[in-house]
Image (cartoon, rainbow, N blue to C red; front, side, top):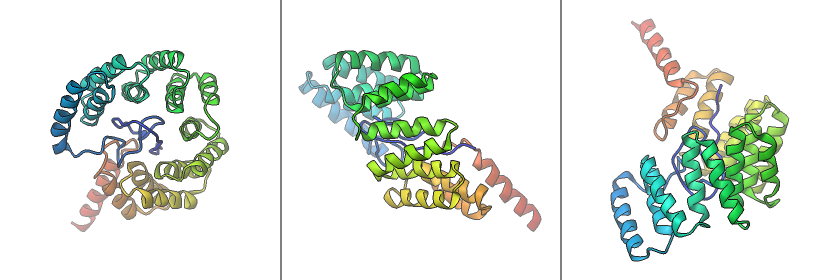
Amino acid sequence: MLLLAAVLVTANSGCSWLGFLPGFGDKGASGRVDVKPEQVVDELSSARTHMQLAPREPYWPFRMGELYAASDSAAQAVSFLNAALTVDPSYAPAAVLLSRIYYDAKMHAQAVSLLDDFLAHNAAAPDAVRAALALHLEALGEIDRAQSVLSACASESRDAHVARTMIALRGSDATAALAAARQALDADQSAANYNNYGIALLYAGRPLEARDAFGKALDLNEQLPGALYNLAIVETFYFFDEATGREWFARYRQYASEDPDNLKARFEADVSKTQKVRD
């Protein structure tokens, strides 16, 4: 069974089923730029004008990349993010967003090369860069190096806390995952961290508390896909309440489409069975 994790912090991008990743943003329901689809064209036009007026400012090509990433136009996003890094090789938001696009594409080796080079030339880079690097290293199975990278982060770094949580949730030690998620939540009581804490509680065999944590996540962000999906799972598989699970899943589908547990097929099958009984 796959639960949807939601981990947070600074620049924005597209969404994999993981939701937010350190260094990649905590915007709205999907981690993307908070711009309505019908506004994207206008925003792109405005950003392009600013970019032409201020060609030595890295923010505007970054903004173009951010908007294209929000529109699922990865190729264009990569082009503009690289342009931002050409203007200013130390511009961290562009590096971490480019890294996130690589994460979604499972281009972990490329991301590690990008971020290693960035850190080699920018020793004072924000911890969001190290947290992103650690997650790519974890995806490549380089756990020890990922932990070493995180150890270089400030003790109060929320990016490092949530990266450790993500890595722990992928592991097999429920106690370690719970401790990491609790530490992240203590550092920052965000919707994403409540969602991750709920996952850790569920892994630890505490579904009642997990349900409460997912609910608190939605109190802070009622559109957080991970919490909505996870409540559908909890109600369906832990409390055997198919009707409530279906309601949570319906709410989830308003904001996201990933379905790692194929709940859509399950609920559609249940409806079909009910209709046959009535017939």
